[in-house]
Structures are given as C-alpha cells and as structure tokens.
Length: 154
Length: 132
Image (tube, rainbow over all chains, first blue to last red; front, side, top):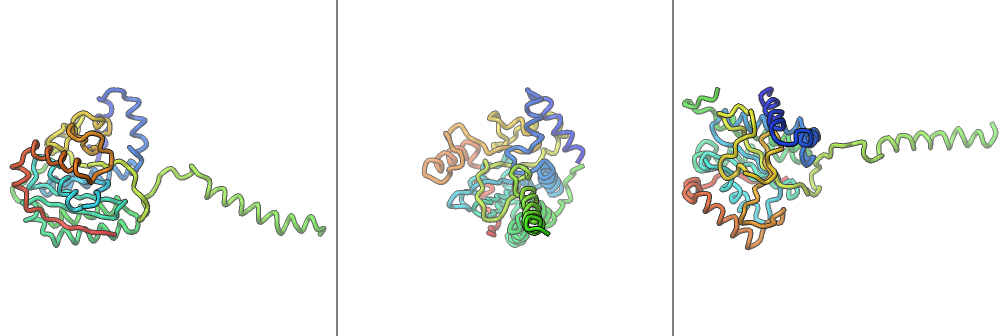
C-alpha cells in the first residue's frame, strides 16, 4: 500500500510540469474513479498478479458490437507474455464483462472458474459497484489460480 | 389568529422548509463524484490497467513493456499503473468508434507486428462472458 502511494508520488514528481500533473491527479483522471478506488484497483491487480504469476490486466471501455472478438483482439495486444495473461474487459455501457485467458493461464483458470468470478462481478455491477465487483472478481480468480510452488514473489 | 398569520404558519412555513431541503439535495455541484448506475451510458475514454512489474519497486515512471505499455502518447502523467488505450501508429483517429473493416485491419497488422508466434502460442483462449 505504502509502496503504491510512494510510487505514484514519485512518478508525478519526476515527470515534467509537476504542479500541473499533481493538480490533475488530485481529482482522479477522467473522473471515472476516485483516487481511493484507483488505489484499490491498482493493489488488486498487482497483488493478484504477483500471487499467481499470471498477468492480470483490466480494460474498461466500449467493446463494440462483437464483444468477444473485440476482447480477444485486445488480449492479443495486452502484453508480451500472452499465454500467461488474463484480461478482464468490462464494458459498462453495454453491460458486458468478458474474461479472456491465455492457453497456459486457462489450464489454471478453467472456464468454469472464470464463469464463477464473472457471476460475482456481474452481481456487484448490477448494483452499481464497479470497483468492488472487479476487486472481488480478481480475488476469486487469483484464489482459483493459486500460488505456483516455484514462484518467488517477495 | 388573523388570516395572514394562519397563512404564514400553515402554508408559507412548510413550503419554506421544503424549499430549503430541496435546495440542499438538488442543487448541482454538491456531488462531485459521479457514480455508475447500471443502464446509463458510458462515455469515458477506454482505459487499460495493468499490474506493476515485479522487479521495479514502483520508483520512477513505470517502464513500458510489451505492446500494452504505451510509449509516448500522453500516458506518462497518470501515476499509477494506469494506461489509456494504445493508439497505434497504424490506426488513425480511433476514439471509441470501434467496429468496422478498417479498424479490424489495423489491429490485425499491429498484432502481426507484435509477434504472430506469441499470439498463436496463446491461441486456444479460455474465459467467460457475463452480462448484467
């Protein structure tokens, strides 16, 4: 937690135009989420990725008419280590959430586990709690994936 | 009680009270934070969130790694591990309007450039879908 806080302050301090970026950051970027919510998302993503060794990324935005195809397209661009990646794509406007797992990740996160996590996420989303749903879904996914024995995270 | 007094006590006073309460609740600008309600439109820019890299302790700007780490366009100032969606060089002016032949081609080209073998190795995608 402290590390995240420290990291963000360093980030803004080192980039040019400190005052402007600071003022920008005080109110959350694009005002989708508050600063606390961003921290929760950040911590959930980072911690679940470190625990499991998978790479969880989160996309929030429109997914177009073909949501599944679009989510897989995004997934293919989501990083270098695709087989071990998991993408959670949320489109609040369309009320759709898609979870895409790479081949190696799918072995640890079978589709049924993903569906369960998606179910709990949609439950929270339906009551208007985007961040809570995402954090809970991430927790479920990382619990299901578990901690591989060889992985050293700390 | 005179008529004026009666009116003041039974009509004007309750109305004034109601007006004050309505003003307190309905005046715009009181509530800064907008909250998502299911069913409302979502007209924000698409955003990516990705985890902090394991090795880097979070000091200094996060290194862009892989094709999702966006180099350049306006992504450095956001502080946490938050990146707006990548606007690749081959996809001009895509600001939310996805779905169309040309955007398909652009992303396909970019995926090829990023490494077709990596995408193919991950190919049997799993996952789930949900609506609410």
